[in-house]
Length: 99
Image (cartoon, rainbow, N blue to C red; front, side, top):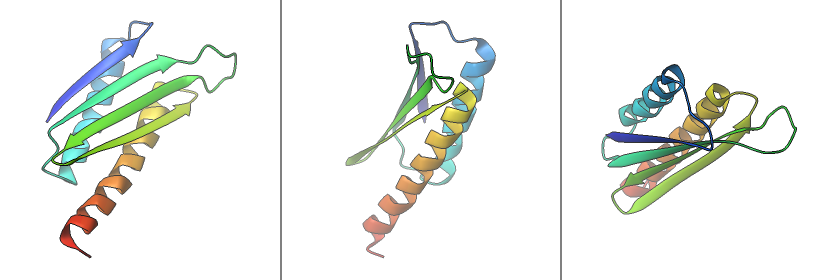
């Protein structure tokens, strides 16, 4: 699976990019048919402490899955978005099998 990570209006360090890629790559364990994924990291302009946003879009045959989370850190936001996508993948697979 190909993972594209884009940091919007800031330069993400190598450690953060590697963390995000590893987390998103783990989704392939739950669904082998993932074609590609895109991750957008951005900082909300508000002064709220939880201003780090991670958006993840996953392309699968016939369906695109999406999750967006906002937290205090990019790592936490990524973890939450990956967990939300894992649940979506599970539901998608059940629908395909007709369970």
